[in-house]
Length: 91
Image (tube, rainbow, N blue to C red; front, side, top):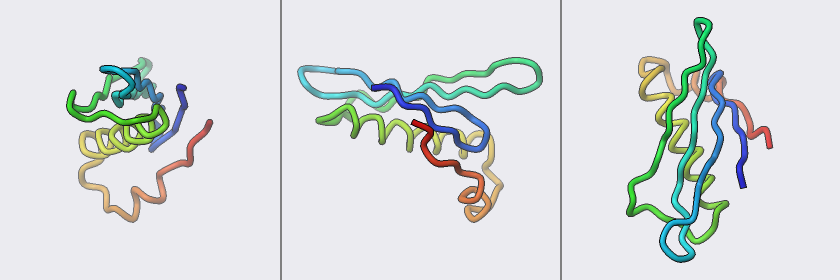
């Protein structure tokens, strides 16, 4: 189940997948188009972080990707401004 979220101009696609047995491992692809080119980054959880369902893994992957975006590209923006810039899940 892949879902797409927009956060601060970045597109986040959840790409969680089955790990060992019936466990799901969180993974997301973050993308942004700026200065005439597409930038992407694969955000993955530690191998020890798994979930019972794909939904739980995807939810964690989206939170993880949002944190990655904020920490790397917007470290000096106050939390109140980040909250206003955050968009709801698209699908």
